[in-house]
Image 1 (tube, rainbow, N blue to C red):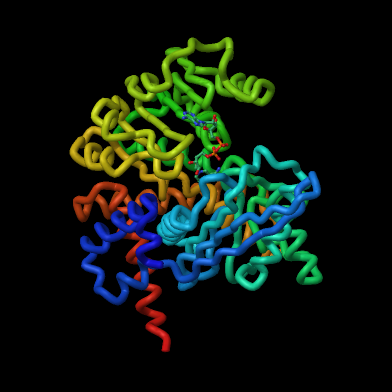
Image 2 (cartoon, rainbow, N blue to C red):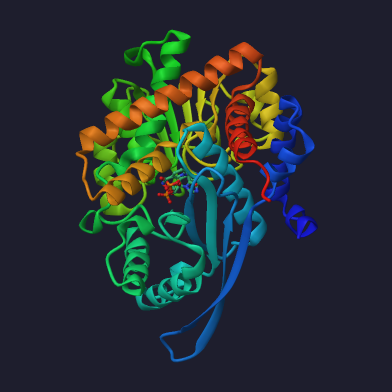
Length: 420
Ligand code: NAD
């Protein structure tokens, strides 16, 4: 299994990052191995009746990286590229994110290899419910709490809640997070990740002595993360001069009216044709001068080919894994870019997921203001820890964030000891 996992390039990248930090921490052999490998790798087959009456079998995976600090937490994705190695890598990264934010969770991730865009709602519902039934022995509010990810949404979470609750004989809202508000989802969850990206970018601006009123930002991606990052940044007075999505990129040196763009994309789905800005080449957009560059779309966009050409002061990683390892080495050589690494920068989502779980367990609901205020407190604390540690130990920010997280996990494992 070890070799099988390491054949996956994403998993071997996660392991390479881990090994580098573990070397720095001089983590000893036993704890190092226990921190590195996932505790449980579960694969199930999910047979469903298609709308045309035929039966199809899908493969679903769930990787629970470790349960040392609490239940595992992480998304469930529906995508044709889902494979167990990538899921294991994403579970490991979730692990470090939860530990860095001091959330009482281990990392998990799951996925079903399928083409959700080509499936009807009925087929998606049957697949989700059957997958939930197959997973019943391995999930629970104290074991594994899933959340939406690529190809899944709050409706998926509602079906999981209903299936699990029907099986239990009573409503169990704490089985998943990212639920609709009607099923005890949390206020503030929708905007949590993007708001967190903007909040941390503003914290970085303060660190390097730039006033938000004088700052500019470029945002790649205008989905859940990009929209709320742009809305919060513009509410702080930051001029958002460039925004892109899958249809192209737009530019306005005076600042794009983000609310108007949000209304436009709500109607037209993509930003192409928005009248309040000029179209530009998306690859060129991310190279233009700005104070904040926030990649909030897909992974691997800051590469060995463009990292040296970036002209931003702050790189705020809203997406997961937007910077390749080659680009990372270039950024580490440059001392003019303040990196907010993904495990910190986009942790707003999992933090409010944690708040949703806490509210569900307590049968209590907080207001959006309470949620956002608690979120900002947690993010600021994590930001200060990462920046302080990086400065003290002369480390790049990404390595500092992972070092704090790995130390936290290793500490919990050491305290619990090795059973038996
Ligand atoms: P989303 O599907 O809502 O939006 C993605 C956006 O990216 C869309 O606007 C799409 O048009 C755009 N896009 C796709 N390919 C692009 C490209 N090549 N260039 C420019 N834009 C492109 O997704 P999301 O929820 O906003 O997630 C975005 C990223 O943030 C992902 O990496 C995700 O893993 C990460 N993330 C999301 C959350 C969350 O709470 N949603 C939490 C943590 C991390």
